[in-house]
Image (cartoon, rainbow, N blue to C red):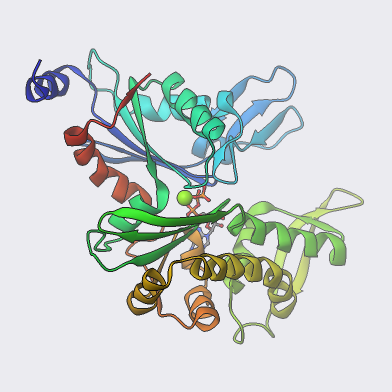
Length: 342
Ligand SMILES: Nc1ncnc2c1ncn2[C@@H]1O[C@H](COP(=O)(O)OP(=O)(O)OP(=O)(O)O)[C@@H](O)[C@H]1O
Ligand SMILES: [Mg+2]
């Protein structure tokens, strides 16, 4: 059967193709012809007695906390850590795109560039079990560059740094493909943990995750302003378990965040040093583009620019760049037939 006829038949009989950004903190889905149909936290609520998953995404995040349930993150450091929980998260989200098709949808899903074979297999397995008929895996930073408005076809090498929740993915793109990649499993969640550690050791409080994230977003990589101000944050008293509010100074938060920021910068520096000289020169000329939640942190672009001496700018819509790029890649998938039937 000609590929054109096959493609027409598929369009008539199948549910729409889906692009998926399955992130450590956030999951986003785009369905062809429908737009972005899901933007949900990557979280499931599991019964501690039976192990049954009872809520996923937004409804899990806003469910009432009790001792009989635990909130579980299906992904860790950008990759699937629990196939069953990931399947449970994706199944209802994929169902949202259903349009009475007799064939299941094909799903283009993004993965960090350093995901190993086993981690890719877990991603394919979870996507298949959630209802995909075919899966294609795209490199996350390439999708982010396309969705973030970079001219990826340029013959001039450009660097993109995706600072997500669990992984910082660094890639150099030239003529539409990745010419160098580097990743560290260190990103915004490590900044959140650093603030939680600070509150636990200095104030004997187990900060609530959303409170710690709020402080990270307030201070980020800021060097000067706001550091003398103090911020009230809530958590459970480590001894009594009761709610307690603490006053934490901006400079304390900045000091806690500093080692993680240093490691992220060091990874960018190492990626630059590992480039062949002619590519490094092109990157120095074209600058670095930032994406992911980390690109939204105050002071992040300035910090990376100061440390590398290269111009740094965020891409368009940093939090949605991956899904916006993945949706554009779906069209290419049609032509190049990159689908793996599962
Ligand atoms: N302004 C902001 N809005 C939302 N999240 C932000 C903001 N600034 C920083 N963050 C942090 O960004 C992270 C989420 O970013 P993003 O959605 O890019 O991660 P992800 O794609 O889920 O993770 P990964 O790609 O590492 O698997 C969270 O840790 C969040 O606290
Ligand atoms: Mg991401």
